[in-house]
Amino acid sequence: MELEAKLHEIKKPIMVLGTSSGAGKSLTVTAICRILKNLGEEPIPFKGQNMSNNAWVDWEGGEMAYSQALQAFACGINPSAEMNPILLKPQGDSISEVIHLGKSIGTTTAQNYYKDWFIPGWEVIKKSLSSIYKKSPNCRLIIEGAGSPVEMNLIHRDLTNLRVAKYLNANCILVTDIERGGVFAQIIGTLELMKPEEKELIKGIIINRFRGDLSLFEEGKKWIEAQTKIPVIGIIPWLNDTFPPEDSLDLLERKSLFKYPEIKVGIIKLPSISNFSDFDPLENEETILIEWIKGSQNLRKYDFIILPGSKQTIKDQIFLENSGLSQDIKEYAKNKGNIIGICGGLQMLGKSLEDPYLKEGPKSYAEQKIKGIGLLPIRTTFFENKLTRQISSESLWPCQSKINGFEIHNGRTELVNTQNSLKIKPIFKDLNLGWYKENKDGGTIAGTYIHGIFENDSWRDQYINLIREGKNLPILNKKSISYKRKRESIIDNLANEFDKHLNITSILN
Image (cartoon, rainbow, N blue to C red; front, side):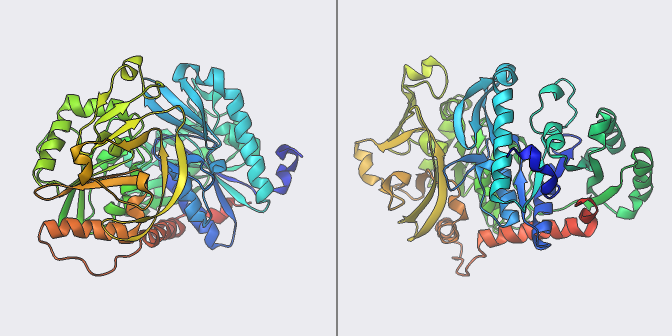
């Protein structure tokens, strides 16, 4: 039976729409998921279409946005690509990779996307919804919208906002960010641009990121409710906990929470950076300060450097070369520097990058070997298909411990048979997951394909202690709090703060 015929039987979905991008939809959904889990419900997150290079791989090897994975953790369930059936991964030049139900099925230009992909996109959204309800008939979907639901030039082909809301007859919440200013115009303008049947779906309004005394907005709350006839169900204060940003642009706005760090980490802000949630465990370490490196500079002030993942490894390697950062990184390595590359960062640390199947860009890439930074004796060849899978392995360096994470990359990396190859050693028992090399005068160059490597507590602790030892800092012997437990605590704190200021029960039925 089609889902449409059974909509009257399901628990009323809740959908979180925003007056703009960055209004706080993702964190609001995360908080509601945990609140409802604590109430004994069976919440499941859903976002029909997401555009992000910050990805996760589920246990079937399917790609999905990390924000929906985090929302699944808030629900206490395993993430699944069905929760984010369409993922668009930007590649630059208005081109994106299209992923349906976790599998890459092609690329598209922004101009052609809705012409070529709108109908199959809507079908895959409906297919995912049907599958979720078939597996979990008693669940309550907590749905996240994208951007604004009233982009008038796009609304006729919108896949993930009001079309989903109307299809499921969801109870919708409109979230607006008061920190940006203009909150009254944002709310009134958004509602005025909706059709009457769409506006009827809006059951509550949330004012997000309010600084100061909440009682000062009481007159504003009354005005909004009088003008819209919709209750303001929550005024959420500014929260200081560190949460994963949805967009790579948000990275540059993040400030360290810790005043007296002992270790300074520099992360290269690649133009096509991906999977930046890899560094959330480091941001929650009290002894560590993270800075983002955007241009050529002397890197000696950093205790270690990270080259993150990249959606376009060759383009980002050319950026490093042209900007002077590649030479900066080489100089840093000569001066007892510690460097670790993850996925694309690992590939860039090698001797060469080869693209015979034009997976990385123009034909000119395929006609030459693109030089890497050259700090590890490895070479990478990009093939037609990419690898996505969960990883369970065991590390050999800097300690022996069990390792979990995931791979999501194109390209196969192999050792180059040179004199330097004798100095390179595997990091893991699975020999193809990463290598490291000790510098002659001190410091290490390491690279791994494992995303989430810093979520492994023993490994992270030992790597940080390796850096501390090089700085003559005392070794941290106390066992750190598990990052996954810390993430649970952060989600709990988020949910508790929302629960104090949000009347969610008013829109459950």
